[in-house]
Length: 252
Image 1: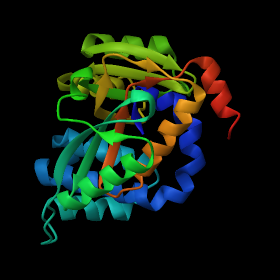
Image 2 (image 1 turned 90 degrees about the vertical axis):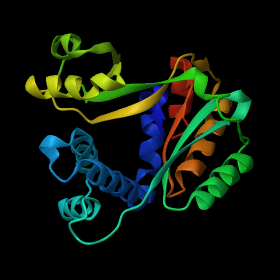
Image 3 (image 1 turned 45 degrees about the vertical axis):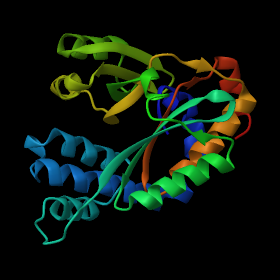
Image 4 (image 1 turned 60 degrees about the horizontal axis):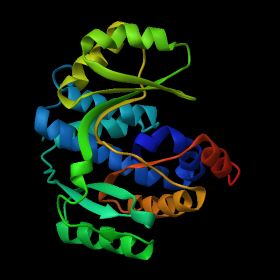
């Protein structure tokens, strides 16, 4: 799950992460392969690949798997990597908006799995453009608060193009224009600040606060979508009040 509610749902994600580790590894490897195919195998000259590798390492993907994925994607093993990116728009329970990002080698399979997950969990596909207008592509960098203060992060990134630094219980979320993601990430590195992830995401322009019951239903829907090997990311416009977060944490 990605997007604005990322931090609010950390505990929810941890509860299911072990059972889905293999599936998560496969998706991270796919991202590495695509990045290497587009920009080559040299991490220093391919920022997208560098970020994909960083995320894989943070998720404990073995280095051997990462190296093989880079070589496979760059065509150094003689294998062919062919994936297409498809964006589906949809609605979840109580009209929560969803942007569903797929990376697939079979468009028909991806469409069928997305449609099935939505229909079985109180959602439905939306017409192209009916949801996307409420989202903007932004760079989103997540920094852990361990050993880092908000002032440290602000000082490092503001002149590099950061639009917003939002503190959370687990750290900080830095929002940038998509075109400024690499420069802001580099500014963090130059300042000696480690980052958890750096991605271009669909960030909602208007957020909708939901109650705990709706949040549970949305979580179930997103879990079902992310069970598909073809679904890489699910972005949503729902938001949770502190009171709802406390109620959800009590479910764990």
